[in-house]
Length: 282
Image 1 (cartoon, rainbow, N blue to C red):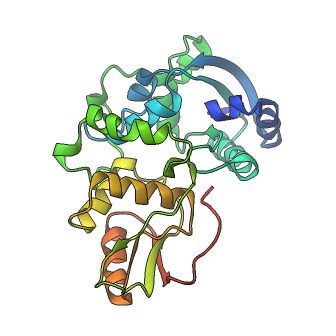
Image 2 (cartoon, rainbow, N blue to C red):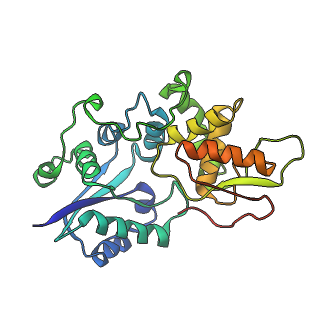
Image 3 (cartoon, rainbow, N blue to C red):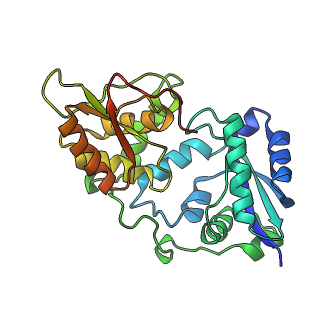
């Protein structure tokens, strides 16, 4: 019995002319492409396909989707193999990202992590193809979908307004010099007295197992007085570059901040501030 999954070639990969390289990586992973669909992505594709992250609870996630994909060409590859198609698709994704990714928001391809995600997301794209439709879950309401990350920290209710978030995020997303694109090093949040910067806490890896709302919400929860803009800047910069510190201060204070964030699902390390690791999160 065959096993199916899919890969989504993102707008940046199409713009860079990487499709032939991606096809080759898919083939090298032992996957056969049984359907190919190129289309212009729309917000509704993600509202339905990612309905396990409801827009009223995770508005930042959906704003990022809209800025990243809406109105831009994507290509969906329905793939199959004899066994374990999801693992093979994830392997192909990892190889493509290792070879071509240029940061958290230029990572070229997506593949689902589970059969549930596969069927849900494929249903959201609604290609109209009988073969894809046979594998998809049909979604009519995000309230019918079990929610992912139900224990994650949400943004404060007064911030859960997609229009307000879009007004803040869109100008930064559209600025090629902004923290969305790996540039600049924001000042870390100071958790101790003036001048106390001996230790800092850094993300160990990009935390893709929480929504962006969960991640920014965790910073707001752990650091009273931090604004949405400041939390977004620190979080997205740290996702792009492992040398960006989230918080700095004495070892005791930074460790308390680390523990608070780790209780909310982030994975962080505490290191001497002068001992920063180079590189970025792929």
